[in-house]
Length: 213
Image (cartoon, rainbow, N blue to C red; front, side, top):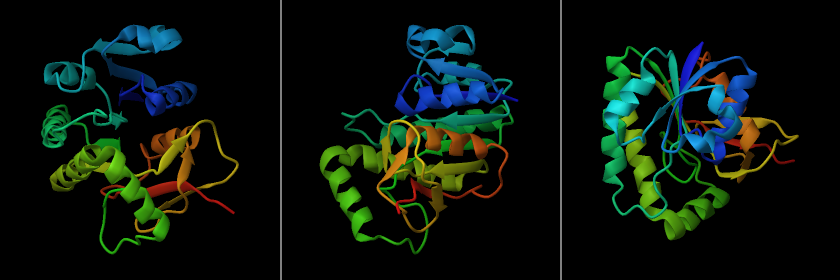
C-alpha cells in the first residue's frame, strides 16, 4: 500500500516513517528540507514544500490510499485559525484525490467527544498546555472541529506527553478517559499505522496513552 506521511522529519513523524518502511509501506512525503530525511531520502518519494503550499500537498497526495499527519502548529503561532483553514484545504485535497482514510495527531489537552472524563491529571495537562502553548491547543481543537464536518474516514489520535523509545506497558485507547500522562513515540507510531486498516476509531478522537501499573 502507498501512503503519504505529512510531518515526516519531526519527532513523531520520523519514527512513524521508520516504522512504516519496516512494515513494507510505499511512502510519499512532504518536506521543507529533504536533507532532514537523512538515510531515508533514497527510500521514499518526497515532494519539497510545506503544509501551507497546497499545490505541493496535492502533488504529494496523488496516488496514495491513506494519509497520516503529525504536523503540529508552530510553537510560536499567534493565529490558530490558520490551522483550521489549512485543515479545510487539506480535506478538499483529500476529497479531490479520492482518499478517504486520514489519520492525524491532536492532543489530550483538548476536547474530542461528548461526556469526556476530565480527571485531575488531564485537567493538569490542559492547564499546563494553556500556560505554555495556548494558541497551539486552540489550533488543535479547531482542526478537530473541521474534521467532524468532513466526509472523510478520519481518526484524530490524542496523546499526552510523548516520550522517547518504546514502553513495556500496553497502549490504552479510549474516547473518554486518559490512562496516563505519557505515551512512548514508538508505541504511538505503531498505533497510527494500525489505524490504516482498522475501522475501530473511524470518525472518532481516541485518547491514547501507555497503561501505568
